[in-house]
Image (cartoon, rainbow, N blue to C red):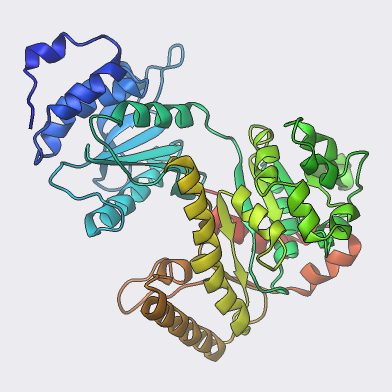
Amino acid sequence: MVFIAENNLKDLSLNPVNNLSPTLLSLPDDANEGIVDNNFIAISFIEALGFNNQERIPSFKTGRGHDKVDYALRRNVQEDNFLYTKLNPFILVELKGRDINLEYGKGKYKYTVAQLKRYLLAPNCRSAQWGIITNSKHIQLFRKHGKTIFPATKCLEINYDNIAQITKDIREKIEQTDRALTVAVYNNKGGVGKTTTVINLAATLTRHKKKVLVVDFDPNQMDLTDSLDAKVGKLGLGDCLKDRKDPDNLKQTIYSYITRFRGGISLSFDVVPVDESLAETDEDNIRKEVSHYALRSKLAALKSEYDYILIDAPPNWRFFSISAIDSADVVLIPTQHNNIRSLKNAAITVRNHIAEIQQNRQKKSKGLEWGAIALPIFFNGGKITPPARVNAHKAIAEIINTTKSEYKFDLLPYFFPQYKPGNNTRIFELPNSAWIANCGFKQVPAAYKYQVAYDYYSQLAKEYFLQ
């Protein structure tokens, strides 16, 4: 191990990025948290992220019990000096020593990620949009949008040669924070209420004062487009995706869906309807004319204009579903408690399909993108009696055990996210309602028309998205 004298560190270039490699190299292999903090995080890493001494608070009180996160960061705005106001942190940094193994999947890694998530959701950290864990050997960036927290990068191994570039890449991600969370609603099994979920979740989010865009990406069914009577404009979605020269042309496909209420009040969300040309083109030709990444690329131009982008994906693992999941930050998976195929297909979606997208995105980006993550499943509609709930949980337990035994894949967090040994097998349940089903024929979201439907979908929105 090479050590650099303290005087030499003081003589380094004033550019904090240039300090990263020497300060990292100065750390002993077994440096504890205090040494890592004083000799790397405090003197070079936070500066390289773009935050000065007036824009950081060590041991920031999260507002939940005695919890303190190692650093909270936010740039100062005019008279609002973060060091003094201690309000509205933007980034939380949870630090460990080199003696703590933060390699992905290890016990201390899982503990630290859970710790960071707890901090991000604490009362004094509601404004935080990013979280970082690091021990100066590994680093990982997490994105928080409302209540949703997901990895923005892999857990990256850092060293003398790559620390400057990785820090630069993380800083660029932070400085280009997207406004929108992109959500694909998908299950490999049909008939689980994906389109109804998209429409009513969009309507509910607008009632919570969020700006929403929905995308019909199921050209064979076109249910979302028909349910909202959304009109295809001069530029259809198919032609938009085929045009690789204009990155902003998805705006030309948007139809504004508006519902007017008594008293002059109106609510609206935007829709990208699907056109018949995509349904009429066989998949081999679509693959030749449209890239799998086309939808993600087109949506990128709109992520600063919306709070949520919801994609209605078809129930198969072919071109449109692959493109929808590849475009998403997170995947919402409806299931039905009395439909074993919907539960098994949810497992396949998580274990195979979403994992495939993650691997491709991570490989292509060299770990600087994680790829879509699956949110925990929910039961979508249908009255659930206590015996039926017991049977569903038994079936899920068998799916989890079989998957772990045969594929070495742990599905537990995706079915029972709050599980603790011996208890807490809660799954969110969205109750069924005749009003919800009937509204599909009236071309008005049930969440706009009936208070009970709005209440149901508000519960769904608060379960997964709204903090």
